[in-house]
Amino acid sequence: MIELYHCDGARSFRALWMLEELGAEYRLHMLPFPPRFRAPAYLEINPLGTIPFMIVDGAAMSESSAILQYLADTHPGAGLSVAPSDRAYPDYLNFLHMGEATLTFPQTLYFRYAMLEPQERRNPQVAEDYRRWFLKRLDVAMGMMSGRDYACGDHFTAADISVGYAIKFAEALGLGDDLAPAAIQYFRRLEARPGYRRAMAVERDNAIE
Image 1 (cartoon, rainbow, N blue to C red):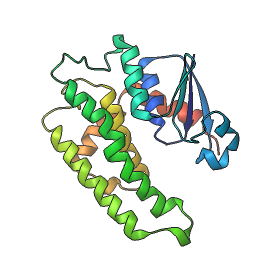
Image 2 (image 1 turned 120 degrees about the horizontal axis):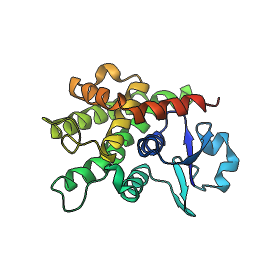
Image 3 (image 1 turned 30 degrees about the vertical axis):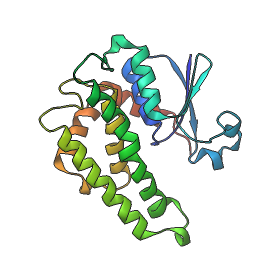
Image 4 (image 1 turned 45 degrees about the vertical axis):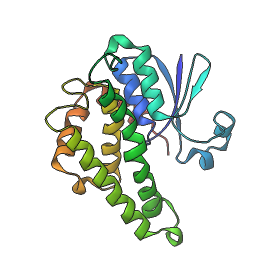
């Protein structure tokens, strides 16, 4: 049994979405955000206090992109990975990791310094710098996908879950009006997927305060 620790709307949604795309059996543990402060007992499970956190076959994973890659590789019949022999493999790996390292990283700093910190600790200049950073890099990513429906052409993969979550997060942060049309159109294709809709329903049905 796979166990997934998740917070509403957080980057652990990538893992939840992936599990629903696979139709895999799993046990979901919902936590308040941020769990390291609001659920201190969680530190006994994951000393980092971060999410996602997935336990499978006694092994633990804490990186969202690594979880996607693991699940895609261990469920080859789902077709959500790309073989090393495939010409699209470089694009697959690049976008799979770009979603977290290049896109979500600046978003988390925007979130922190524009919204999460107490008012006296917020920093509008830092928030604005990272907002611009994210939007510029997303525009470049969309340019790299120009002429195709998904990160690897016409084939939906785990890489699209990685990048797609970053756009979902941007809309949740109130940056939807700043997104280029290409990014919005791309994400609308992704959120129309049954797997995405199931993941949203699971999250909603298990939400905690």
